[in-house]
Length: 595
Ligand SMILES: [Zn+2]
Image: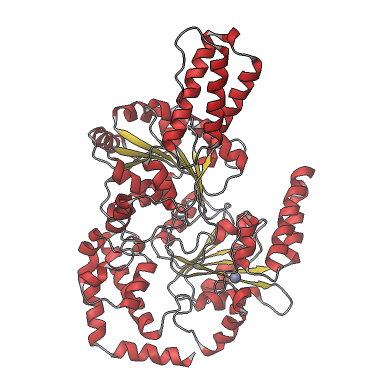
């Protein structure tokens, strides 16, 4: 690039420089971090030149430079093919026990590791945590994770500790002595990750953090910073100066859904420099989607009971539109012997927290709830989500079904829908101003059209979010041409069938059931949620592969060295004992044949 004259600014030279800058910016490759930063520094020098020689710069040149500046600020887009490199793959395998990245994870990790600011639009269940947890291991120092969900911090830290990552959280739930201990350790460099709430940053954490060796800031639920978003949280505005406060370290912003307005706002508010924008996929093939129109011949609550009974000891959520139906459906399910609890915003906060905890610890199988249930739920082993009523928008539907199967194991989603849902939604909108009511009405009608459409359900949903995929082929009732709800109702008369969600053969299903019981015992002994031992996906692979040695066990996704050491022997012993005793397999085989 041409040199900038120190003195005696020549207008022709200036034109050449601007033109050169324009060409370089226009041809800038999104992955070219070096080139981009060279352009930024040239622009900065031109800017300072202008500030001392304003009269030399023609207006035309200034407006051209403004265009360049805007272009440099634009989020860069990078394809999923960008690799994160061998060290990131090694952490994925050696710490977390996985051999494959999920869509969007790799380019984000690559971006962060190359020192770029990044905005990741990662739909629910797309595995966004790894996009900062892996860099945290590689960057050294401490990664600061800002999250609004205080209730989830402990779970996240427990999950990291279970795979041997040094992590902690700092928030208002800690007493002062515990807090000072953690602060001391943080400054001493004891943690790879520290979670904090945005409110804390403002109040007291700010000073502490400048004394720690922070190398990366990850902002979760980043749309909360934007007034364009629906969840604006004023405390997020405290994050505005973070990047510069830590000397320009990379900032990673994560959000589940975001429009271009919100994305732009996130970049601006967090002071990001030419952030790299990466979108994960909205397609969740492990969710099997099924729907059924409501009608005079369908008793929805009986159908729900049949579906729940087919899934003994599995965690699920049943969403209802009103508190009243939450209460009555819970009572109905309880009377039929289902371990179910209600959850809605009309209940005392303590009661609600108790329900959430019981669900998290697998002490209750089914939570019957209104939309109020979910924000604080990060339970990876939710095996089914049933919608007794149709949600009022595709966004709400996607978010709610997205709570199923976060561990990647097969999970089922059922929705009952009908014109009556549209009518009741419209009835609720009577009190709302006309403009809002109109918008909501359009959304709910759009939702009905979407579920009624005779096409692949996954394709329809991701299409709504602007993504194009082929028909799923095997993860929805439209593609499969089956009616699982009808099947469940018919099967009720013949007794339950095993492996309905997992699709395991009877022998593997028997191993899965035994391993799940072992997991429950271990979790109870240690006072942790069962999924922190191994998640369902890992347990199912174990049941299928039936490993006989530690080497074989370590091959299974989700079995890293720490978990292998902690739990491997117990699980191998259990599998060994199952092999030696034929009897439980025989009885399950029999039950399998009956269905
Ligand atoms: Zn499909």
